[in-house]
Image 1 (spheres, helix red, strand yellow):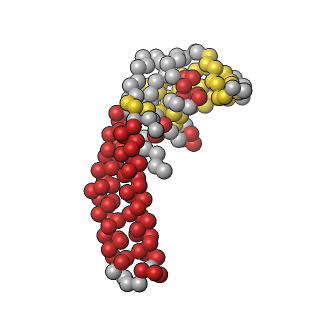
Image 2: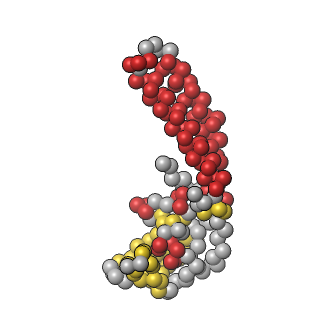
Image 3: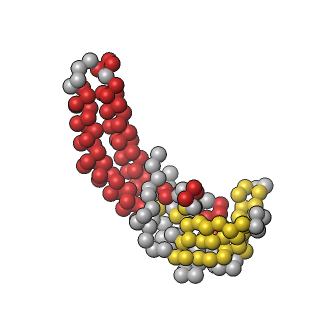
Length: 167
């Protein structure tokens, strides 16, 4: 995997693991016990649903632990006037004559529908380290590239509102 994550991402994942182990796991085990006590398991939907919930929780715990184990800690080295991690960037797309606003985040927090763009994405890679006024070439693949211009940069240190993406 080797996702590039911030220390904050890793801490949020550790907090989620702890919550799932201490709270959700107990709830899931209790739900299986209660459903099992209802009798005939061959036609007991609640039993199968409770087992599925328990298995999903354990799968999520394993996924998060594997992410932490294989993560590469991302240190933001951008200066105050450059695009960096948790930076909100207003970008002018020359080709479309449109302005869009994005926030640069790690892959685990990306959500393009909310304007959260991964630093690993083509546009995230192109914008990282650039300054207001820079004209930047974004290479999507070998046959397609486009140009954008950085209109504004707003640095944000706090990512506490950002959610870790779940699968």
